[in-house]
Amino acid sequence: MSGSSQRFLVRPSGPLRGELRVPGDKSISHRAVMLGALADGITTIEGFLPGEDCLATRRAFEAMDVACEETSETGMRIHGVGLYGLSEPSAPLDLGNSGTSMRLLLGLLAGQEFSSTLIGDASLSRRPMRRVTEPLARMGAQIETTEAGTAPLHIRGGQRLHGASYELSVASAQVKSALLLAGLYAQEPTIVNEPGISRDHTERMLASFGVDVPVSGLSCRVRGGQRLKATTIEVPADLSSAAFPVVAALMAPGSDILLPGVGVNPSRAGILKILEMMGAQISLLNVRAAGAEPIADLHVVAGPLHGVDVPPALVPLAIDEFPALLVAAAMASGVTRITGAAELRVKESDRISAMASGLEAVGVRVEEAADGITVHGGGVRGGIVDALGDHRIAMSFAALGAVAPEGIEIVDVANVQTSFPGFVGAMAGLGLNIEQSA
Image 1 (cartoon, one colour):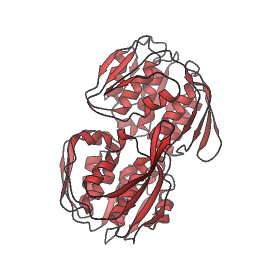
Image 2 (cartoon, rainbow, N blue to C red):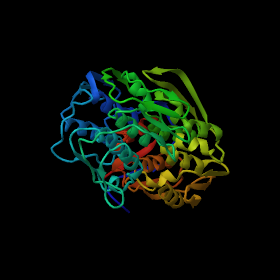
Image 3 (cartoon, rainbow, N blue to C red):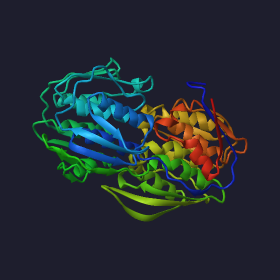
Image 4 (cartoon, one colour):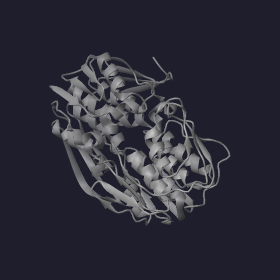
């Protein structure tokens, strides 16, 4: 078994009932700090996720002399320094486990007058960065990586960036966002064309800061030199975090829960579409807007699920939620097949391998492929699962523990704090029989 000694023990539970406000959206929290720092004036953030990943982003900007003032546990004021106002950090910027922070900061820092270095923990230091550094180099950025294309990343300041038109081979919100942020510092327009839909939080939020970001189909562009105007950002509840109580409630007979104010941006709502294809009873109530983002209250009622072949077009819209979808597949009747998801191998862990090993450990038959996995549903037994320090693996098997007759023990779960602080208490409040121990 790997990593920390922290573990979850989940025993069979009765129905999950009640209402739960899941933490703020991680992707949007990152971007709110970054763009607030570059804006002119004071940006107010409500619903910020105080998880370790987002706090790593905050600390990075504080190290560049951006004042981040807490107003509540999830409220913050960012005292923006303007597009050209960041200061050279005195030490490498340690981004912990946060791939979003590292990839987006590569773009943002490529256009600065000062040099900087990005580092992370052992997991982040294994994650590939060339898919960001190589297109940035075409804009004129100078970034040094290890021979493997990983962190530490040394970004040389004072480079003249020029715009370009990019055809991404794989739809990726992080690559797109890094290029758009670098484009703010380029002398010509930067155009990003994708082969499919990816999350559009960056485009939406840039527009809310007054930046002109025309979007046409799968293409978006930005002109350099545009000033950002401070604004107020209301961060929705995180759909990725909502996935765990959602699938737990779908699986545990008699469950009926309400998750208010969850972000339902179409560019990342693939999990809802896939679960509905599997027969899930999920209703979107009170659909409304939180700034530039659509939100809704999710009403989830338990019911039988059946296996599906996941359409390739939905894969990038649910890439972070596949661990939760795979545990739902384990309890569904029939077979669920996922292909075209090779990116899962370069997340916080190799999520295809980690989920295959975990599901087999609790009695589920799976078949692993290079770019996906096949799950033979019908139920689980229980057992011990190694989360490999991956927060989404840990929380997914915690949800599955609700219906595992022998219970599930999950080890190496400390990184759940990166995205869902208070997970154990929140799930226990709905009725999940879960304990955490050191």
